[in-house]
Amino acid sequence: MARKENSSIHTPEFREMAIKLATEGDKSVADVARELGLPVWKLHDWLRKEKRQLVKAHKQTAQLKTTEQRLKELEKRNKQLEQENEILKKAAAYFAKTLL
Image (cartoon, rainbow, N blue to C red; front, top):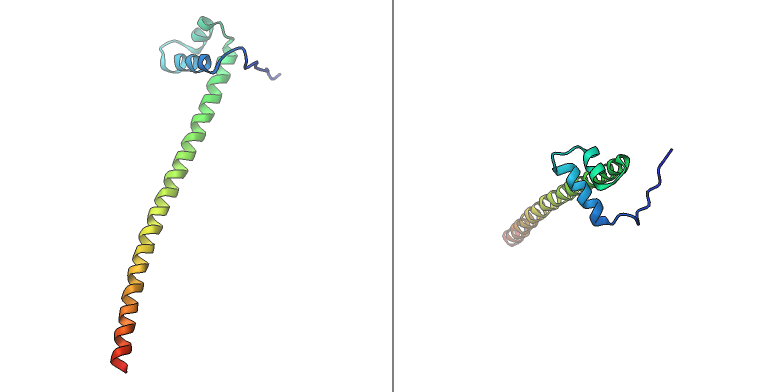
């Protein structure tokens, strides 16, 4: 049976503090929940949601880095092709003069 959380009871700041205590402290999740007057399942639920958000943010960051790297590669290739194009234009002009 799914539990429905009434998010208006606890502020986002309270949730962040509870998550920080549970993840960064040396106490168990159950101990932190008990000290804060929370059901253990609720703190576990908050921790799961936080983990999902962190994973999602990590994937987005990795994707952004890949996109930025690809953009740099394309810009480098574009510059190279522009230089080659200039060389070909000069060569074509040179050969056009010599043939006439």
